[in-house]
Length: 213
Image (cartoon, rainbow, N blue to C red):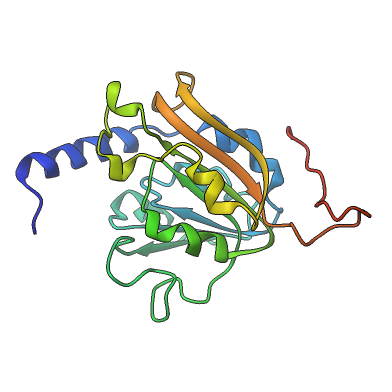
């Protein structure tokens, strides 16, 4: 079923608002030091690519993927950028066999202001051992303040934690109303490292990571 004109207009307005923002979210800035220099980074639902762009000088490759990549056209000849246009919410997952990201692995995945629950497990699977997930998007409670208000686009309390429990080490997690960020609202934010099996400790706990760069 096609979206109604009102829904389409709202979606386009929100996208336009996001594209006007050029600086990366402070959550990425805070934890980007955990991403391996020269590593491979995936910027999911990249929009204008503000997050992946901030890592181009230190990453071996940044893969930008979105359903609309016009705002990324200037990166198509960049030596460390790969731009992929794909509908992340189609019946075929981009990570599935024959998907545009099939068999690909990354040292970091960045997801900001985007939620499609069906991809959460695939995102974790696509991380290399030691890979970093930096995720920030809107959560329940945001509907009282601003868009998005649709519960399909709002994380439940602890939902990101549940997505990585037993699979990744949580370095930082927050859930609450955030004013000092790119788009204020009720946000859930996670930084996690896929290193639960990488331990030199007698108790088997994974290595400790610095909280600041």
